[in-house]
Structures are given as C-alpha cells and as structure tokens.
Image 1 (cartoon, helix red, strand yellow):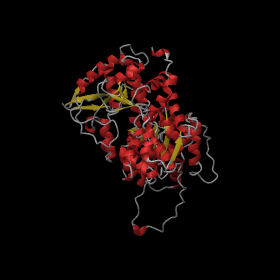
Image 2: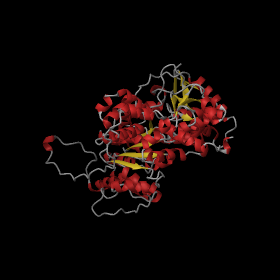
Image 3: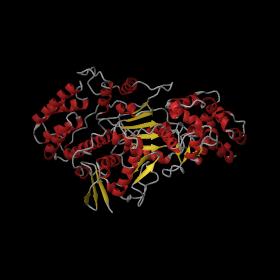
Length: 620
C-alpha cells in the first residue's frame, strides 16, 4: 500500500493515487498536527490541547489513543529508507515499522520525503529545483485547520518557507532576464504579504525589467506608507538604497556584464566594516563530538529552516558545542556571529529589552548603512523592530544560550533574510516550529578519557587508563563533570588516579569532590530543580532515594508512592525538562529504563533526606 500525504494546501491522503477519507474531524486534526510536525515527537498534552482546546473530557487520553489507532490503520506501515545514524533526532525508523510510534509520552508520525509534500518541497528547495518545489503548493498550507493553534503555528512556518523559496526563485528568474514573465505572479504574492521588503524589492525589479519604472516607484511609495502606518518604521536601509538607485539610474535593471575588453579600471569599493563577533573563546580542550558538529553545521548552513535547537541535561556541553561550531562558520556568516545569554549571573531571566540592546549595540544598528551623520527619519521605539531591520538582508549567526521558554526566543528569530540561529536549552522547546533539533548526550567513554588526558596530561592517563575510565564513569560521562574532575586532578598532581577513583566510588561524596570550594555547580543544580513546579521538585528529590540513577517505572512509582499511571506522567514532565533520559526511544511503559544524570542524582541524594518528607497536597 503506497500512501501519500499532502499539507501544502487542504489536507489530503492518497492511497495508490486515489483519495482516501481521513475520518472524523478530530482524527483529521490529529493527522494534520502530526503531519505538520512529521518525524518530530509531539507530547500527548499538546495533542489533547489541539483536539479539545481548554475543555478536554476526562477520557481525553483514552480518546487520543483511539484516534491514533484509527490513523495507524489509515496510514499503514512506514516505507521510507532507513535513517542515517548521524542525522538529527526524529527521523523515520525504516521500512515496515509502525507509521505512528509512541515515544516518551508523545507520538511521532514517521514519513519519508517521497510520502509528504512538505518534505518533498524542502528536498527540492535544497537541491536548487525551486520551480519544482513551488509547484507542489496547492493553496494555503493546512487550509481548514488554521483555527487550531498547534497547526496554525506550523502552517505559518510553512508559509514563511514558501515565501523564502519564492523569493529565491524570483531572484533567479530576474538574474536570467525573465522579469517581465514573473510580474503577475510576483504582484499576486506581494499583495498577500504587503510588508515583506525583499519580495517588494524583487517585484520592483521585475517591473523595471519590463520597462514599467513608474509602477516600481509607486510600489516603493505604497510600501513606505504601509510601514509607517502599520509599524511606525521607515523602509530598511537596503530598500532605501535600492529606491535611490531607481531614481538615479535610467538604464535597465540587472544589466548583463560587459565583455572583459570593454571593462574599465576597477572602481574602488568602500571598505566593509568589520563584522561583529561576540562569541566567547573557542573551548581550548573541546573534544570529540564530530557527528554533532557536522549535524549542527549542516543545519545552520542549509538552504531551509536555519534554526537549530540543541537540548540536553545540565552539563552536557550544549554551549561549548554551539560556540565551537560557530567559530568554524565565519565564512558562512560574513555579517557577524553574535552570542547572547538569556540568564544573568544569578540565573534569573534577563529582560528582552536588555538582550536586544546588547545585540543592537554589537551591530551598531542604523549607523553602518546610512551616510555619515545621517539620522533615521522615523524614531524606532521598539528594539524588536530595530533588531529585525538589522537582520533584513544580512547573513549573521546568532547563538542564543540557556533558553527556558519559547517566548524568550521568538522575538530574536529573523523574520526575513538569511541569518541563522542556534538555541541551547535544557527543555525541548517543542513550540519552536520548523527547528532542526539535536539532543546532545553525554560523552562516550573514549571522548571523556581523551578530554581528561588533554587537561591532566596524556602520560598520566596512559599510565593508568583503567582508573581514568573509572573516574569519568563516576561523573556519568557528562562534560561538565569530566571538566570538574579534570581541573581537580590537575591541582592534585600528587594523587594517583586509582586513589582518586576510589574517592569517587562513594556517590554521596561526588559533589564535594567535584565542587571543592566553588558553590557554582550546586547553585546551577539547585536552580535547575528550583525552577520546576513544586510537585516536580519533590519528585526529583524522592528519586534521589533510589539506590541507582537508572530505574524502571515500577521502581519510580514505589519511591514516589504513586500508581504507575500517575508516576509515568511525573517522569514525562522530568523528561521534557531534560532532568531524565531514557535508554531507548520506544517500549512498553514498564520496560523503559529511565536515567537521572549523575550530577543531578548526586544532588538529589544529598538533598533527599532533608526535604522530601513534606509531600505536595495536590499529589494525593
């Protein structure tokens, strides 16, 4: 059975080329939600909210399972190719596997590029077949489901991708001198998106190529008035320069280059200002991580969806990975590489205005594009719009560090242009639509030992590799823990590795050994637990009473004193916050093995005896 799905227009399902009824309205909403997030896990809570908004019935989860079963019968088994083990998370599991799988408290609809028009669109766009990609669109994405917020946000993401590809296609057509042939299509699209500056600039260029310069100037005037009225903003410096060139140039737009013999001496170009670089120093002992670096590089430099979210537990090395990769991408982002933390030294969130002011100060927004001493004609009172204006027409990389909520990140994402953003976060931030997602695990044992050797000396490690391996295993192989133990051993040069490994064998002494006199690690651990709801904080500390950091649902339910159904929801909340991991992607609830990162487990054990006696009332 060959099943094909379409969301670039009204939802449709084709089986062997013939339309299939996708079922009831609720089942269609579920299918649209899963398809719009294909190969990505959606939590059961988000699907329940999509189906019933704010008034789910008591049987919502059971009803959801019924709808999922119906879709499994409709969609059949997955038939795509086996995944690349080095690719990002959420890829299809391969031929013959279930189409819709249950993963860590949510569901994933697996589909290959040939089975979903949105994936084919992205594949063709990346390959440069822009015209073929645009032909896949049959109307407004997910038409008929835009009243569901989860689906509408995904549809808006598709709309933005369509516009980006359409603009690239139009630019290529203009470069080939076919502007007159594109006017009708460009004008129709621009009318639906009247404030999109790049699209308007391309529309003006097409009109000029057709000899309709007065109409092109009228388009600029219309856009200028709309920007002032709707946003209180002037046109961007790039668009203003383009307009002035039209006023001064009576020749054809995009003239073909003259033969070499006719070229005069080169005209000196104004010196380009140095691109801002706010990146921290590249970690000197950065070790391993070849596959994540390769994946992140491809995500940030690819043609579609230049937003990457790197998640993982505290101490996994998310920031180090992002900074190290950003240092390697200077040539890809000639307009700058910026780094901004969303948390202050005290762990509290920074106000959005402070974050934007830091970014705008680094970019010297508004001073590099106009004549010396020129002032903008309209005062920009909202730094969010000033930031978006700077991003327009530029190719910069922004590293956003330590995000906790989607709302903190969205104002920083470029609405136009070719800039890219990488976000580091402990929570999964599943509400950031269209993001490439990477879960960063702990080191491998080999990487951890290599890192240790780079800090304390390879000869010292080689002399007792067995003890070195035991030491890094005691830290749970987390890069933060390995770095702390390496710094400690670099100071304790007289202590043999075997003796130090024996110290770490007592898990209760782990934090004391690693932290020494520095309270920062305990502060960060306390912060990661303290920002949870009270019930989740209590659960973390109760789990610290377990004899090992790896446990099953039955063991968790026993120590939490809850039935398995309640306990699994608690564990799913901790998974969402990256305070737990699972050994496998899927399995029966009672066979899944959960694991608490070593540093957090040590902290929970240390705190458990003092704070778990009081049980939150709403847990009963």
